[in-house]
Image (tube, rainbow, N blue to C red):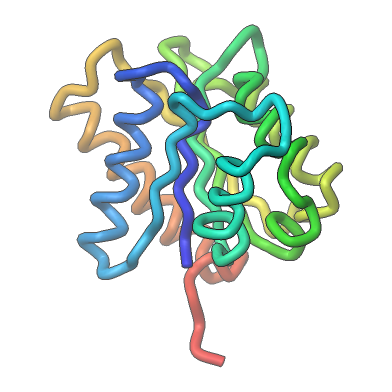
Length: 172
């Protein structure tokens, strides 16, 4: 199972728009994906809401798609806090991740994606060969050309990397 994580708690953000585009693209390819938004989530402590998220979305997932905005040259604290309060071994170890940075700047959250890469590697969850990263420069409003651009980036990325990095599911 895939889980798409919109890595911000801001409402009506470009991040959630890009995350919804990922869900639509996967659905059009016949891939079912869970969608997790961090809006309104209290991750300051391990509470029943966090445990429910683990049980329903994180533990069953074999692959994650992280969509994260740039926040002060890194990722939002709510995403880091989710990683910190969750059960690391059950939720993250041995699973694959695709990282997508969203930013209105030209670098597409490059520094944030590097930071998230280090965090995930520090969790013991992945190594560089199993981690796909991409940047998506978002416009203030995701118009039709921006949607096509994100779709094109996604298609190119899957074509280029799926065989080498085994991102796609394989029958085994």
